[in-house]
Structure formats: structure tokens, C-alpha cells
Image 1 (cartoon, rainbow, N blue to C red):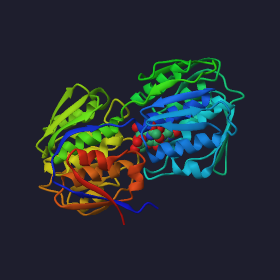
Image 2: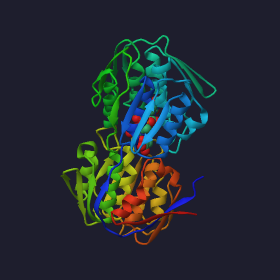
Image 3: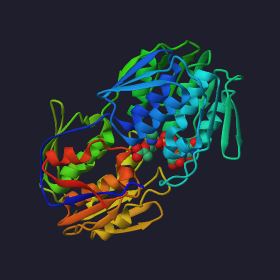
Image 4: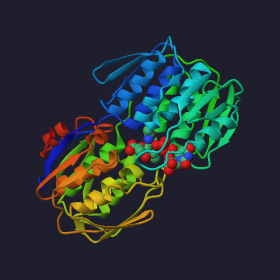
Length: 420
Ligand code: EPU
């Protein structure tokens, strides 16, 4: 296990500029989609993350050649030699389930282990399987192992019971190989899905509607290699904004776009922060003490993102007034609360609701990053706290944040990484 720690001396204002990396949740499905293209695809603005490394291992296991040139990833899937994902790799990254649709489209069959629970609670894939089965896929689930074949697949209309991001992506990918018109109703509308559509279109797929609730795919065309740029990571953008909001400062968050995190920006403004769109990003000015009073409810896009819930909560802890958070997407996404309480936050949870009463100050201490966004939340809290914090389980943070120490140091934070 990774024994590194982040040591943060809080209470310093942030200033200057900070860059937002390419989006983890965009690059992963795009990497899966490259297996459907016979030839070398290029993905630009690829962040260096452990989840990306896992996806590279999966691609290599499938027989693809993968090389990195700076922030560009070249994937040549001309000669695939496998259609399975070993259990070990599935366990490393449970969201790799969207390789199912891509491998089915590329190879006509796929075998992978069932993604079990994770730090966010159970991660069911019933919606993925129901949608693919509705389109005629034969999927056998035996002893935790899924074996799927696309032999009987046909085009048709799929109604998702919930706008699941992964299920939408899986159906988009699988349907590209199925002749005829497939329609996904109640599709997820996240910007990352639009980015995936951009790649598929560049590869010759006829697909439109991403970003709305109905996506249509005219499948059956073979795909050629394509090039795409990964969109900026809107949750990383939200993290840098919340960090500056809580610690105080004047920071330009480069590549942040307000339209992809409109709800987060609106909440920060209501909490007393100044945000302005500037050439190349969003400029934030904050005195560092936020004003509560809101009820934040996580929702599918364009609602408030579940991935920013912990991060905004951390920013609201040292402040005035009460803020209520209602987590509607995941069952178990308050694991940061006990760590924030250690730092002096006043938070009570009941079921899906957390009530945050602002306190005069947070105090640095030793805390555990229980999951990726919980880790980011603790970084935000530590930057605003008085004294020294030591954050461990950085393997979670490394899944989604590239070069965090350097970026925050350059913005004026006192932060370093040590080996315990
Ligand atoms: N769900 C089901 N059945 C399914 C699929 C989903 O019940 O078949 C439930 C999930 O258990 C969850 C909810 O529906 O309670 C939402 O799940 P969704 O499928 O939309 O999420 P996902 O595709 O598994 C992606 C992101 C997550 C992000 C969610 C919600 C990727 C790789 N992951 O997950 O990102 O939280 O959408 O926006 O795109 C993160 O980056 O920290 C992260 C967890």
C-alpha cells in the first residue's frame, strides 16, 4: 500500500494561476472506445493518473499498443488478441465496466469480472446489463464473472430507469457496432458524454444527442482511428475554486468553464465569493470565510455534482451559518465527514443528509482520504485550517489528481509529500 502523506500547513492565501488537467471521467471511456477503431488513435490532454495507468494496462492486455508522448496517448488497436479483463484489473478500477460495451463492439464478445462494491458503497451494473440485454446482447453472470456476446444484438430503443453515466456510455459504445438506429432515452447528460460522442464522431460513427436526454446512434459502420482532446476536468476545477474560496485569495483557475460547473459556481457566489469568467478560465476572489444558508442537493447533470459534494462541504466548514447537503446519487458518500469533524468541523449526518454548522476555524491534524473526492475535500479543509495537517491514503487522490503538490505550491500553498 502507498504510505505517502501530504503535509499541509494551512492558513495561506492562494494566488496566481492554477491549471486544470484533462478529465478523468472523459479520458477513461474514450480510451475504452479506441479498441473499436482499427488503427492508431490519438488522445490529447491525457492526465497522468493511476486510473489512466490501469486503463492502459487493460488496453495492453487486450493487445493494443499504447504509447505516451507528453500529454498525448497513442492507442493502436489494429491487432486485438483478447476480449477479457482479468479480475485483478477490474478490482483496481471498478468503473472499467464501460470496456464491456467497447469490447463487445470490437470483438463481438467480452468476459470480465463483476465490479463489486467500492468505497462509495455498492456499484450495481443492473442498468448497464438490462439496457444491453434489451438490445439482444446475451450476458451470463456466473460466479462473479460476466460473459457477453453481441451475436443476437439488434438496434432499438432503450429507456434507462435512471440516467446512469456508465450505462449511457456502455450503450453508446456497443450500439456503434449494431446496424440500424438505436435510441437511448433518459440518457445521462454529463459533458464527459459529449466528449465521448466527439471522439466517436471523429472515428466515423453516426451519433448525436449527447448532452441531451435522447442519444441516437446509427450503428454498423466500421470505425477508423481518430483524434480528440480530453475536456478539462470540471471536478478538479471545482476543487481549485473551493480551495481558494476556503483559504482565501485571488486565483485564476485556467481552463475552468462555468457552464460545466454552474451549480458549484452559483453556490460559491451565494457563499460570498467573487467569480468572474476571464480569458482562459475563471478568476476567484475570496476573503476565506464563507456564508452558509443553502441546501445543496446532488443530482444528475446539470444538477449539483455528487463528485463536488465533499469538496464544497469542506469549504463550508469554517464559516458562518448552516449548510445542508443531501446526497441523492450514492449510498455511502459521507465518509469524509468523520475526518472533517476531527479537524473541528461541526457536522451531523442522518441518512442521506449532512448538516454543516460553520465553525470559527478548523485545526490541522492527521486524517485519512477514504475515497478520491473525500481526499480532495481534506486537502481543501487543510489549506483553510490553522496548523499542520497530515493526509494519508494518497492512492485514492492519485486516481484523479495530477501533480497536485506542485500546482498548489505554485499557487502559494505550503504543501509537500513525504513517505511515512
Ligand atoms: N446505478 C445503479 N445501477 C447501475 C448503474 C448505476 O443502481 O447499473 C446507480 C449507482 O449505484 C449510483 C448512481 O446510479 O448510485 C449513479 O451511477 P452512475 O452510473 O451515473 O455513475 P458511474 O458511471 O458509475 C460516473 C463517474 C463517477 C460519478 C458518477 C455520477 C466515471 C468513471 N465515474 O460513475 O465519478 O460520481 O458518474 O456522476 O465516469 C469520481 O470521479 O469521483 C466518480 C466517482
